[in-house]
Length: 129
Image 1 (cartoon, rainbow, N blue to C red):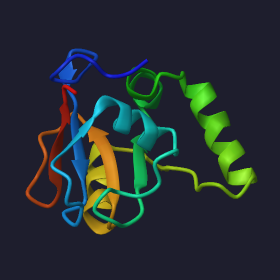
Image 2 (tube, rainbow, N blue to C red; image 1 turned 45 degrees about the vertical axis):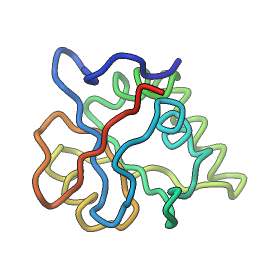
Image 3 (cartoon, helix red, strand yellow; image 1 turned 180 degrees about the horizontal axis):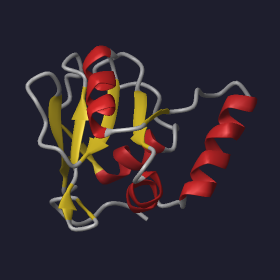
Image 4 (cartoon, helix red, strand yellow; image 1 turned 120 degrees about the vertical axis):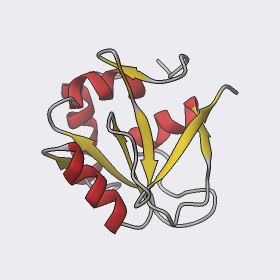
């Protein structure tokens, strides 16, 4: 399952894709976002490692909607990656403010929030292609 509806919505709220200011990409396509969330895309096209941050409180809905797997399968998938040495667990944040702060402070990071992004982070969009 890939993202196909723009703008992104979560429980009736718009979802913003935010990245650290160092990320050069201004947009990603749905397939790339899927690969990022599932850890199969580990580096940005412009260089640098991808660091994922998710919200604990809406992780299930967000993950299912944008990665194509439910929360349980998502966590199990990442545990497998960690166990086999192929990845590190995403940062799980307690609040949107914490997620925004993490993205602001962590080069290469990406997260999904419903708060309008501040100038401390960069909003990117999903290409229709």
